[in-house]
Length: 373
Image 1 (cartoon, helix red, strand yellow):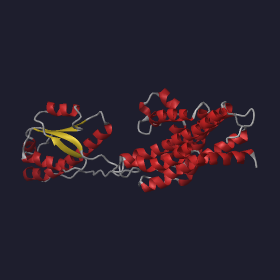
Image 2 (cartoon, one colour):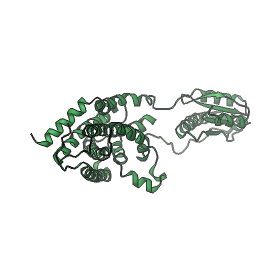
Image 3 (cartoon, one colour):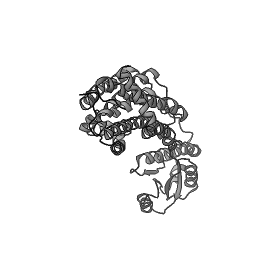
Image 4 (cartoon, helix red, strand yellow):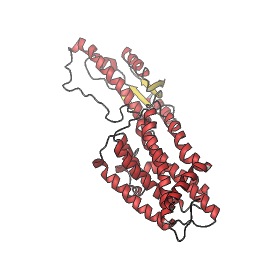
């Protein structure tokens, strides 16, 4: 039996028999597929507190408040007498938004004029502010259409708008936070658990031998393929089964996902072998990889646009497999991108595979034969 085949079998056996490796590379992937999306199962924010300053105190303003309080997105928690009191409640974190109803709102509407409302959100939390402003604005718009009936009694029937805008989301059909974030985090989970698993196995072997690890090329290639099989199965598990169970957008380009996912996992394995070669103990893999998880996600620019990031940081981020891999898999699975539309990402991952593969061979390349187990 060739050294390549022997190394592949030993790597798979090591993953399945090492308690820490099983928990990291298999158990954590399955656990996170149910645990992490649970926080976003409602997809949209609800019951966000707002305060209302009603200077009109009319039947119209009371009807408006009844409509707003009936929204699922927000709930009215207080009605302070002044705008300063409302602003202090916002600053103390007691509310996410302020609705100001000026005096004489009802009189202006009944006279055929334009009533003015002021809506403010807490910009410290952009996601919450967006839901507050969007939800309340929708209720105000619906209320404004109904007031046109009252105005018609005095001014005549208003003319219908020449254009009606109908908005339909293309990919994130629920317009939910979970559908926007969880698919990208899934790729990061697979990446990080794979890195930790590689680091744990290499660190364990190095600690047992008491020296730096060295492998010949067939043995190293067998190790890489073994890790790659585990990682690819985890990635496809998230892209297929988990997305189906959690009802996230999925199934855009299955063949593209296999090709892109294979390149992503291959680059991740090469990166993991290179980085793992520096771990003298298995515990070091946990410390380093876990600490880097959040920075890696933000560097992927999935939740933060790249145009607002420093150019040098964006360029540096492309040296990480996660930056390209996360965006590639989201575009293929959620956005139905074709291979020609993601060719740049595919070539980038191929380049990273070559780069980190060469570095891994440099760090772990054999000067003698040393089997994994």
